[in-house]
Amino acid sequence: MSKPSILQKLNHPLFERYNLNVQIKRDDLIDPIISGNKWRKLKYNLQHVQTKGFKGIISFGGAYSNHIHALSYACYKNQLNSIGIIRGEADYANNYTLSQAKKWGMNLQFVDRKTYRQRDEEEYLQELSKQHPKYFIIPEGGSNTLALRGVAEVCEELHLQTQYDTLLTPVGSAGTISGLILGDNNQHNILGIAVLKQKNYLHDSVNTLLKNDGKSQPMKNWKILNDYHCGGYAKFSHKNLKTLKEFSAITGVLFEPIYSGKMILALLDLIEKGYFEENHHIVLLHTGGLQGLGGLIEQNKLKKDEWPLPLALQAL
Ligand SMILES: *Cc1c(COP(=O)(O)O)cnc(C)c1O
Image 1 (tube, rainbow, N blue to C red):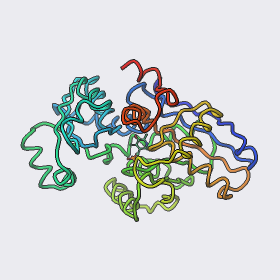
Image 2 (cartoon, rainbow, N blue to C red):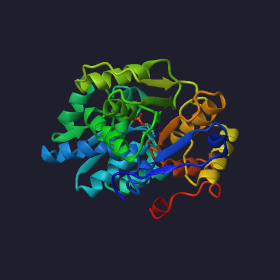
Image 3 (cartoon, rainbow, N blue to C red):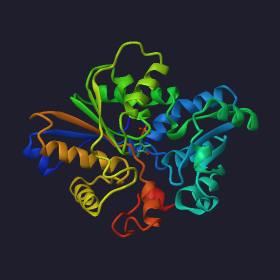
């Protein structure tokens, strides 16, 4: 399947009780491997790299990064070289995520935390460019100006698919929500759920990304909620898992507990608190990321028989 991604109605007793219309945009189904928002974010980056004649792409990520996974496969499919600067020890190279990236030809370079922290610094990036001429550098999470253009297309598709009041998305590095804000152009409420503990730097990230895009008109229709990280990035409780499994059983849609699952936990809590008025029409963006389940199972954070991977990932 490709684009536009499917928009699907979700049925759940809670939605009925509060008289809410909830639909989900299945970006997790755009591509069997490059799922969700990473596909959107890479689209114009790949085009740029190909039209400008770069040899390959360099980017950054943690040991189980969805972005690194998606990027390595996208480069493999497009006959581009890829280099992944990975935070942590070299033995991560054999983990669920990185062993696949390696198989798709990514050159994995492991760096300590101190080096990794320089990933957005001009001097460090210039050094990398010197070491690897003709490689295009994409920031962690794939969030740059070109990524915003790809994500903005979600809004164009939605415009033709439905009428709605609020669009919900998980927020990591803020590229996705920034793209949605850009594409939406003050038409709907955009509600982001921060998946990591933070103060307000995500708001600054959004403003920086939008400013880089040359958007002069202020965008006011968005908000990031900070109370749904469940203890921090990739943290979750047994109860959170139980809630998510129940929700998946009722709706028939699978979520992972690092990103899309936290959006679902937030949605359920917000509804119960009366956050949305009656007849409110909500669209959830399923950002994908289901390969993350493989890593969580490998680390014994999830039980294999309770969290079946999608078939395309099982076949890898
Ligand atoms: C990367 C990722 C996000 C976060 O997107 P940002 O653009 O970094 O905010 C959300 N959901 C999934 C599944 C992801 O892999």
